[in-house]
Amino acid sequence: MEIIHSFSQLSEHLVSSSCRKRIAVACPHDVHTTDAIMMALQRGIATFTLFGDAARINSFAGLGGMPGVEVYDEADCDKATAMAVDAVRRGEADILMKGSINTDNILKAILNKEHGILPKGNVISHVTVMEVPGRPKLIFMGDVAVIPYPTLAQRVQIINYILRCCRAFGIERPRLGLIHFTEKVNPKFPNSTDYVELVKMAHAGDFGECIIDGPMDVRTAFDNESAVIKGIHSPLEGDADGLVFPNIESGNVFYKTMTYFCHAEIAGILLGAQCPVVVSSRGDSVLSKYNSIALACAIS
Image 1 (cartoon, rainbow, N blue to C red):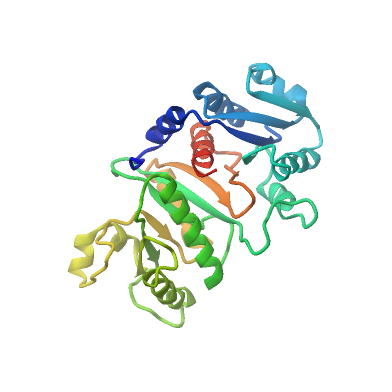
Image 2 (tube, rainbow, N blue to C red):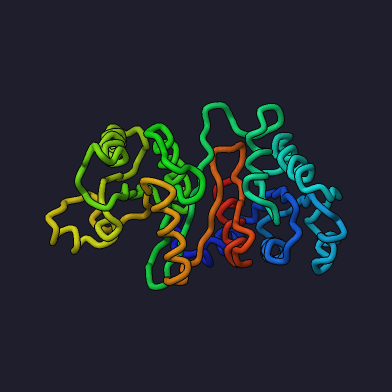
């Protein structure tokens, strides 16, 4: 498979594959969500089952009457969300997506012990893919939205989810940087000592074909000249595909800085549940929501 370097290339790949995924959407009651759904329908990458207020859904350009769309009328958003999750649990959908509801609401339904879709032992984590203007390839990173202060075991799952995304984009040997404010290991910062263990695991082959190194700062992960000047010899050689952040604070600040000041395009999904979950912010653009749908289709 040819490596996918941009979201437009991802969309082209999905269109050419002619393999449409089934997406269950909870409460698509906002125009950005419905416009993103319309884009996916027009490009033929997915079909949709929509759970929510039918009158509101059908008010968006007749979405309810389009081929590839089913609408189940339920005005109560918590009940509609439970119905969407149940569709996934029964194997009637490949992907779950939230519309105009809080992420907490859909997580509650996913994590429900009796009717949820989280396999035993799994951790829910957020993976972001970012396209930065002027950069020749995408950046894969986690976790910027769900796990506040990951444990070592959670970091292992975060890495596996990022690697899964990289490989779905054709990167056979992903290169991940373990991000810290310095390359030095210090017990005062438990993430840096976790990084030592993670690098050992990577060398032992626990993550499959990949290169993982750290701790390091963001510049070192992407700029080999900077690393050489500082006397740092990293197998990443300044060519990281992905970043693993020490905590949600640093990851989220990086994510929002890049989108606001650098105009980066983004896609984001939750992994760890029975299926990928599209959880774009209610304020995200139509394009961001569409990119997230496309990412979920690539991973599913």
